[in-house]
Image (cartoon, chains in turn purple, yellow):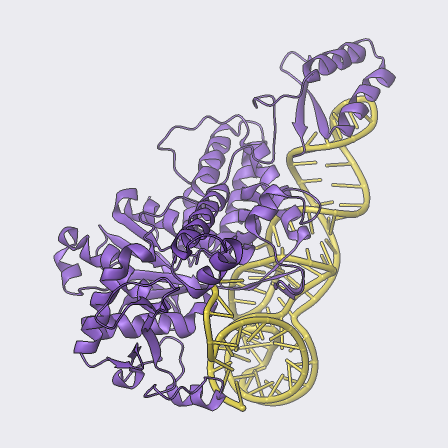
Length: 486
RNA sequence: GGCCACGUGGCGGAGUGGUUACGCAGCGGAUUGCAAAUCCGCGUACUCCGGUUCAAUUCCGGACGUGGCCUCCA
């Protein structure tokens, strides 16, 4: 089997391109992670899931030990401060902030796990990288790309001739919008903050520019530099050293293209004097909820944990991998209208696959089917991959489909799906009490041709959400399997 | 106002310059004591208006519509 060529859509060039890693032995990916001030909502779940699929695919194509995936945790931010003051008014600010960020971060990790996502290779926190940010800022000042004004350090966008490449907009276009507040101390209205002063009651770190805190964009420039270049550069190939500081893929939501990613590029390229921060820029599309923009005021704001743990959405709880499939049913760059119906469809599909894969025993090294990998390798064509999966499932359901069954199970595992999350079976440990006795009674009734009694037992179980499925074994004796809706 | 996506059957969702996936739901059949599960089969679409072409859902232009960014945001 030949390894398929990976193709990815690059926002920078607005085309699908063959993916060529700078160093195939060290494929490097950075994705903007959450700002930990509140529960992650289902919109946040999309990039987490999409880039998890990319991570899994890269590990498959290049080897699990040859991919570094960094996803940051932004734990310094004015929204966090506000939340800390609101929720813990009696605590000292730093302690209150830690409470907010620690609980939110733990919740985020739990959510990501429930969605079937692997942990990234590194999950750096902004507050652990303040020194790196300060060093980067100092370099930008020394290079003439940043200046101090009014107690702030600002990036000078005019100092970068090709600023705006990623978003495809130039500074004059932005000015025409006239929605950028003009601040007198800025040389140019589009100049953005690298470091800002903190009041005594705000979190802050000492710096050459006074006690303050970093701007948002500088965090990602500093952390990607540290974890995708500085700390691993000794292992990188000579070819990689031809392109110092640059890494392979940078991802995030569509909304981050401007200004966040644009500004990251400006900072990193100007600090290091390079022509590219990352070679490929990938952005996932947005989602709406039941046809409307998700917002707190509309009351359709749904968090991941609400979906998993409460009955707020559709009157029931949803398994994490159903949410995962609902998210992946649509290509990652297309918009999604998130709805109960969509979740139900995902669940139906997942249940079919899990039924077809039931009974397979997997070994550790069992990998995905080539047809599925091939579709994913074409710009993460998950939907086409799921069609390939359906083909395998059909084979598995036919007589003598043991090989297909095994292949299906291995592929599901590879894609991050459980094998029984929407299916409870006799193999499961959670058999309801008295079920075995009820089934035995019913079989006895059937053998005595007492269909009325047998059907009564079946109806009673159905009310408990248990579905019975009769079949016959090789000898012609009746067998009963069961499933629970959960 | 500027920039960027998108518009396919009841729903989800691929794809293609000519023969029009796939899934769900629906319908019919096989199987079943009856079901369920499974298998087999069937139907309906390419926003609108121009243009290019022997031929467009697919290419070009325009209109309309939806969403996003331009300010914190996945």
